[in-house]
Image (tube, rainbow, N blue to C red; front, side, top):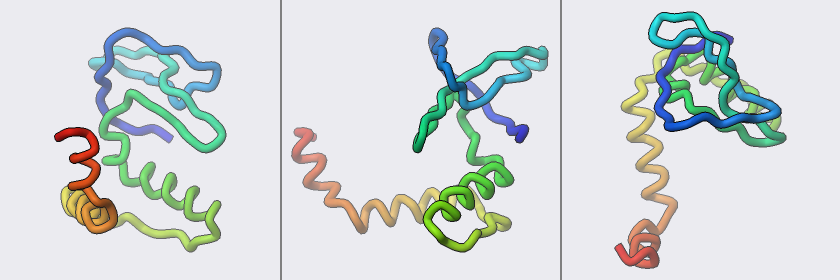
Length: 105
């Protein structure tokens, strides 16, 4: 699936199982394997990947399918609202004060 994003990194990484292939850098065509994919995790240098809602929906529904959950649609999502919703869930379910105290912050 083609997605758009931007890359921030210093240096190069290699993987026997890259996550994706970068096909354009600053408008110039290229072929650069990037990131890595494992049995139950992936990593990528591609920032903004989840702003591609078709990718996000497909990715979420792949995970939901593995858990036996019904598919969801991300149509109508507003990324800023979803970030806020996620932040509230983290705040409600983690003792952030304790974590910061343990870190000496």
